[in-house]
Image 1 (tube, rainbow, N blue to C red):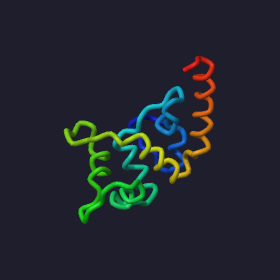
Image 2: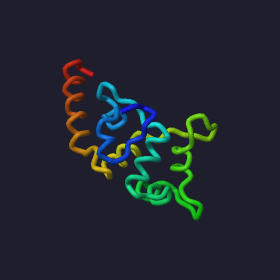
Image 3: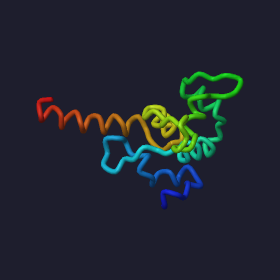
Amino acid sequence: MSESVLPLTIADYARLPCVLHKFEPGYVPPGAAQVKQLRLLMGYSQAQLGVLLGKAVSQKGCDKVYKWELPETSKYHKPIEYLAWRQMLYCAGLATIEDDIAIADKYKEILNAQNL
């Protein structure tokens, strides 16, 4: 799937590098368009996603989500926090906490072997 083509379904996200755990080879943080597209596919408004992720929400919506979805060229754009992205992936069924625990255990073994 080309970087410029957004996934049409949640299942299409499974093939994207932004779905990998950040310690897995090939991980790439999601872009603004990927964040917005996943939110839309999940059926959430910006305010609803803000509530789900524990962000401040007003009558206007959620400023955090709004800034995540602005084009990267905007001076007001902010990249989504990694854990907020992971929570979106959990809710979309694209990742599980068990996946993350397994990766943490793998790295724990590597670090212990290196006495770190």
